[in-house]
Length: 499
Picture 1 (cartoon, rainbow, N blue to C red):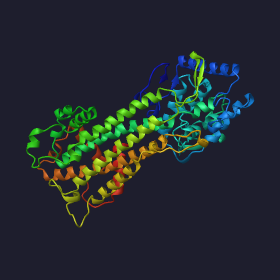
Picture 2: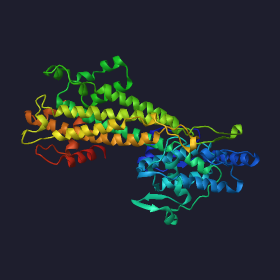
Picture 3: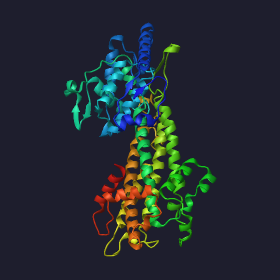
Picture 4: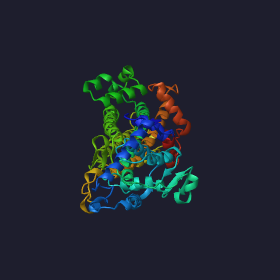
């Protein structure tokens, strides 16, 4: 893929670089524009004897300290080293790849004043699959994601740690092999690399990409559960959803109908008049999550197509302007929003699991034929409930907090990076909860099949698409009426569904 001057990019445009390992390059127009920005910056600071933040001054509270011309390179090198102070487990590699892509995209606008060498160094890391090790915790989500981005950029100065080909390599010991000769950072380049919201944006992009896939699989699982519980199809009637007009709800109902079509005649034959909310209100709940994801995606795409470092340079108006585009509040709010949107998927799934195990609708309690001597799938619901509780605990908004830093100069921060880390945890828990529901739905359908004169009759309400989904799942996770260790089965279910 080639970055072109003036174009805007979506998450879908960029996703193949992350997940399919497609290469990235810059168009010649982009390179000309980057050179133009750099030349302007060099000429501007050469002819004007005045302080420019982070170019010839210290950082944060030290912004009043002016740095001499012979120490400007050291200033930028010191910045990278001193800010690389993250802690915790390493960020997953897909998120780091997003960080690299989004930093390249931001710097390619030509408003940050870096040289082509900086962009080429980042492109080398990305295209040669040299993934910097970035600790998970350390960003306050304002002044940009300083610590994570410092770790991301350490390899450019010949330091830090790289993950490559399954190995963890100290860059200083493998510079020649990795073709990572240190780049001498010039005025503003260290600051341009560290200032920015690319860690928060990377997590948001990965969450939306992964979340879309989770939702798609969840709709299959929910349809299987509906069939197993003999839920009515009438609540999916498009007239109901068009009457309300909520777009996500309309979409969710339509996608559920693709998996379990309307069947009015069968509905009339059911002994129960209506179903509990966890079955009947799925379009409303799933649709709200889809709407939330769409809203966050709109914010994210504006962010990734903009410039989020400071100061910004404007060659056409002969200006270097100090502002606060590094403040991550838009992404922090969005990430906190996704916490709740994803958690509700786990919450309503656990309720469906509970009902499938409840002994209602002619299904044996806990989906075992020898209840008492056997516990069946009883404790699987306990695990789902525990996971839902974890999700709820993580839903406390990180963005409602702010802690003063840099001796008071940076007195309000977004905490968006912490929101991102927590949302990633939540989505992992959602996958586990859904994996448990699918085990229960598959087993419930298996028991119904045993009750029917025709073994396939129990799943006739499912579309061919959803029947194929169920068949493929059972190739890896077979229904089993014997007592067994469920932890292994849950792990296998999740791997089958989401790997």
